[in-house]
Image (cartoon, rainbow, N blue to C red; front, side, top):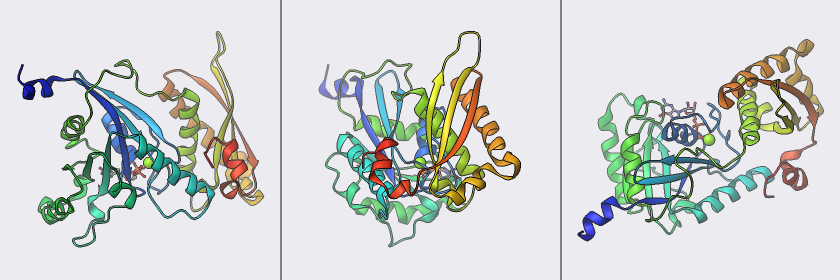
Length: 303
Ligand code: GDP
Ligand code: MG
């Protein structure tokens, strides 16, 4: 077989870091590539706090996607931990996929963070949210300018929401992966445990239901996850807030807010797990946990 043919048919497998500024659509893209909702998504920035693993397997490839928090200037301990996660994910990745929101790009102002510039292996850029562009020609100078940076092996316009361009993105990412045997079985979607995603789903519902600072002040801990023979799974979760004053906001008048949160979270968890569950929520205060290294470690962040 000629080397060219050999290269085309070889099995490729490796880690792809999904990185970019907050809200550009990294988690939406991860779900679209997986064809399943795994990563939580909200219209608010900084929804994703932890590395999330999604595995996409094809006949000749396995992409291990690593969704990350959006790159920002950290202001407090939690954000510093989030940025450490971005750094660690990049240091483990074979390919960096740098996602940009095309509707936020302006000629002469395309910004690529140092963490991406310093990445030593192939970088692929993706222009996301092209479904929102009324005139696709607007992209041409932006594509040119991004190409001229000389940082990216390829630039792919996509819509993480509609799936447009996503097949091409997979092709491009695979082309830059090393050859190797698969790390996971082809049916496996993630390597993280169910309870991780259950906590994430509850946090996502908090982002949807509450406004301003409240969702940022909430951390979710699963304290009990019990499969019961002949009965629904029993899940008990604690929602930690930063200040006593936030507790009544989460609970609501007569417990109304926490009840509707519990209902929405339970439905989403059942859809994710594919089985009915019993969900019990409590609210507790962990004073200033976002700024407190000890509290962050307890919640499983590397602080
Ligand atoms: P992340 O912070 O980068 O992970 O961004 P998310 O995936 O949480 O998405 C942020 C917001 O952008 C959400 O409201 C998404 O629905 C929206 N979004 C993401 N991708 C697209 C897209 O391709 N088109 C449109 N119209 N909206 C998108
Ligand atoms: Mg995200």
